[in-house]
Length: 227
Image 1 (cartoon, rainbow, N blue to C red):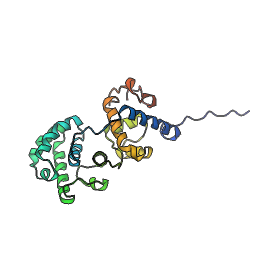
Image 2: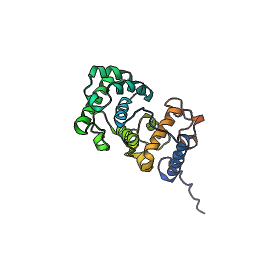
Image 3: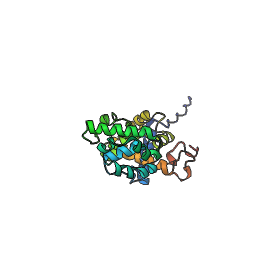
Image 4: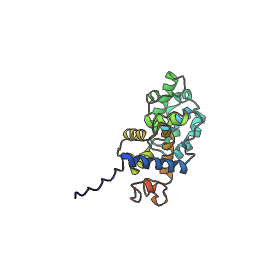
């Protein structure tokens, strides 16, 4: 009698089991953070664009401390384009990399004035042509300000959690985004990003993640490994 070989375990990433696990992760995140949203404070698309550029390698909390004075001083693209560079650098200094950010802010503001009638464009193609605007920033603006699901925001939290949850094996943001876009439905892209970011800020920390208190632990291959 020929003995059957034991079935090979299904891969954690890919395969039927991964799709079922992802559905459970999406549902858990929805129950945990039904009201998750972008935590940058803004009143219009221009303010969100500025705040998102400033948020590079900076916390939303720190950006939110800087932007009220910035928007009071330069409330629109035309005003920011004409700002004194030294004054602008001084105001945004707490966000880090202030010289480069000031350059990007003013170059983008001038582009909005020259090519978009002072308004923030509503397409990925137009947004990524603005200085200092890559896919992450464009996805934030399109998804949050306009409700356009153009992709998945991949910041440090989404990168870290998607790797720990084995939703991707990639290390580069663009490749991680492609993996997540393939696995999720377009209508899930915007909210999934917000919820994963909230979970990363509240539970799945970069150092010493709180696996014991994590609702996603039953579905996380990295649970208990310390990240």
